[in-house]
Length: 438
Ligand code: HEM
Figure: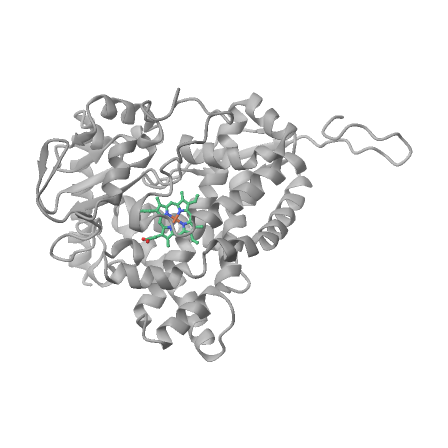
């Protein structure tokens, strides 16, 4: 790309961003979701949108599904897809990616029948039986990370635990050797900020750099597994390619999606869950007293502050919804974070409460044909983490202001400083004290 083209692209990106900001500032609640300060606490914006009806409208032409039922309904409705009717991948058009670096279509950006074929291959690695078998590995990694954190008074929950746990797990599953978890966490952050659109040329360059680096790692692995297959996920994808079920490009796109979707979101399940618990000391105390509450923490964290705040669908044919006509190619945001605070479905929804009924699943993993492929794995990681944390670090507390990440779509912390006052261990000469006291 010439310098002139690059400058034009940069100017275009900035103009679009500035235009969006003006719309947000003028009071457009849907547009506000992509801008600070609203992005940092979108829940009051969601509440206003829900009060305005189930199907919000932005001056930009984008619609927004605000309640639990309508979000679930659209995600299951095959008249909505993820691509525009001309085949353009929903959400990437106009986001500012350089033409040679348009995101490679992965599962998330494909409609049937291509989606069905790819999903069947990838699903085989994440069935309930397979995921149950990953538990000892997840426990081993969790114990190692927490043992290291426990030797220090202060640490960053994100950098020292919430990020390296899922990165190590998914890299082990994919067979990525010698992982530099800090570098991977950086790539994950950059790529998820891309979901909210490209903000500047520098941002676009960061995205290209992260994609190129990850592609390099994965291409090397794919070549190795083609030569010498193992029993990891990449080998399963390569075998499917050998049987003509996947193209070489699809193997790479699927591996890339599994890698990034596999850690960036789970990192924030753990971070957002710990943050909510530490702000409600009674709930943390309840978990310390009974680590069997760990699955309840996972479900309540997924509801209260879900890592994926929204996704989107594109109308495929003219249709009626809640008495309104929607034209083909209308984009509808599916506000998962709002659905999970819908008072029609969850009582006292703004309260983080481990005791609430778990009769209705939060919408954090989506619904319908794109329902999160890694939901069982994410739950397993969350359950292991939330059982181990109160056991190893029962006196965990906040130790400074957390810093939020930049993406409006993926909600979570960049850093979450915590402190864990040591638990005095009973010395050999004294009678044993009750655990967790001292
Ligand atoms: C707490 C953690 C996680 C959350 C909140 C989450 C959330 C989601 C959501 C909302 C979707 C649907 C998006 C849409 O419909 O547009 C999705 C899809 C997906 N997720 Fe997750 N996810 C998590 C963990 C994982 C993990 C651990 C993996 C990998 C092993 C993974 C892999 C995928 C894949 C491959 C898809 C695409 C499925 C398809 O299009 O058919 N996710 N996830």
